[in-house]
Length: 535
Image (cartoon, rainbow, N blue to C red; front, side):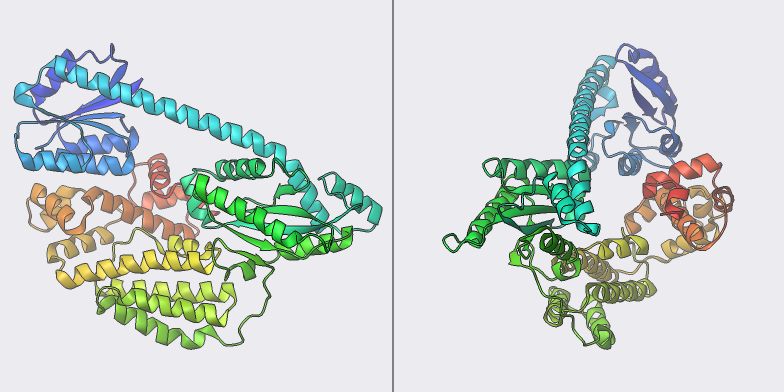
């Protein structure tokens, strides 16, 4: 049964809709009726509805603000707008919020609203069915991957464990399909590019592995002598038979298969892979050494162009210190972001990425250098004014550290520096109003209390409705969302830097209960407080 909420400051209208719409017959439970958007928002934070029927013009929080705030928590929320305003401006705002059902109160009758609710319920049923099928696909993928786990364990055991007995090693290899009696093998490591983004696109690493595995299986259906085993969630190992024949160019044949696989993954799944050809192994010992060496090439893979097919790269790192040029780079980025014209900071980024590629610094040094520059740049812009970033420092660090290649790191920097440049441009073009600065200061000083919009508006000597709209217009964020986000950011800091318990932090930040704090923390961060602390 779906849940619906009614919101209207006209109490008779609430009663009219509550009594004359056949909610139970529609298999919809009316979860609440509220006379302003703020009350409905607070209720939804504990019990999010599937359907929202709301007026536009209301005190405390109007319908447009309510829809915007709830859609940030539940993007799939279905909405019907009721209004007396036959005004194009409201219709425009509704369209921007992807609201298809828009009804004037003067012409509303229960049958019309019932018809709309039936259509909404049908759409929700279709979404639920699609979700069910998706979960079934995930279950199928998990089952298929379980069947591959045994070969993966056998291969990793062969690679990692010492081989005291040649014959025992050969038997272990034969369990995977490796037949060393007649030929050797050339190992190839296939690494999925932009794995983190692809995992989000496929919703899980198991679905991604399932899709890639299917392509490899189809590709190698006519080549049963080629062995394919998933090494980890991002990498696959292919072992090609090697006869050392002078009559056949085995490396060309191998390259042709790799090229075909690369094109198939790109065509059918829009996935790029970087493939590294290892040294041939003619017996169990040399094959073990070749496989072990290939899987330890993560650092060298950092500099390979995405989508390339290459022989095993050499490990020669620069003796020059990247941090010797730290201040020079920081000043260039700072100048380009704050004062430079369009395209200037992109040119600076491109130059430094080329500098890193040319000298080939150790990847861990590059990431440390990049993160330090980004944190210093963010701090500089924050001192100019408020930098409203969608990325916390912790999320920024995680995103940059997880970049597997310099190309991927460059793309992440392009996104983060672009955000800073855009915000810097906003600061240059306008001055943040003193009321907003004071409101934020007041909120940050009272995070241990339950802060209301009316309280802050009174502190600023402003009308609450006017202040609510002013805050949204100036910051691009709802007042309540800002308070909740600020409290959760402070909670993260306390979890990272103190020994306070979850219950103590909940009380320190003015949450009504420990359970409400845990639910709110999980909604914003995706994990419970203790999961965050122990990550």
